Length: 197
Image (cartoon, rainbow, N blue to C red; front, side, top):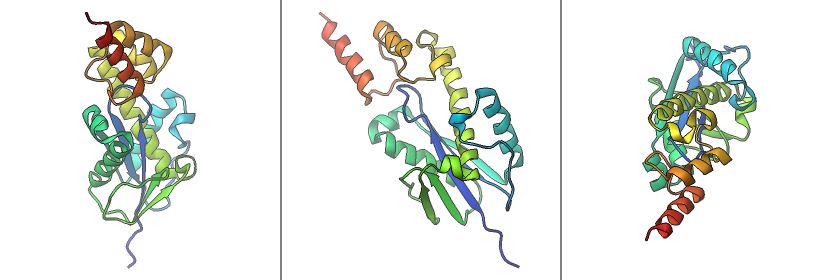
């Protein structure tokens, strides 16, 4: 009997924001399984993403979500932190994939055959599913952080550098959830330091 080929899709969410962790997810489907409606998370409405995420979690053979912290992002840089989150997600699956397909041009360090797929989130169902799980998990975390730091409006922009977020940083200052290695945050810190008597 030939062992089933386990294709794992991996994607991240949250490389661009100024605040919060970066998330990654790994998804393995059963054989030729397809889940209707699965697409790149960026083209899906938030409610549709949530419905699909629940379906993926219920029907996938295996899935895992992991993250890299703000401290890790600042220490390693966002690319390396994203790859670390991806590695953590794959290792948390509880099975050994035959092949890991990663969205983008870079691959995390893994002991499994791994291939980078440019725009894989739009062309590989497993990667699309991973993008949905990573995005919905990160959005949930940003809502949790919003409850702790409501002054920044994280529930609306999810930490991205919108005019509203930049204005809030200028007004309230930088806090522990902000990525200090990012230029707008660094600039705000420098300006605040320069304004002190």
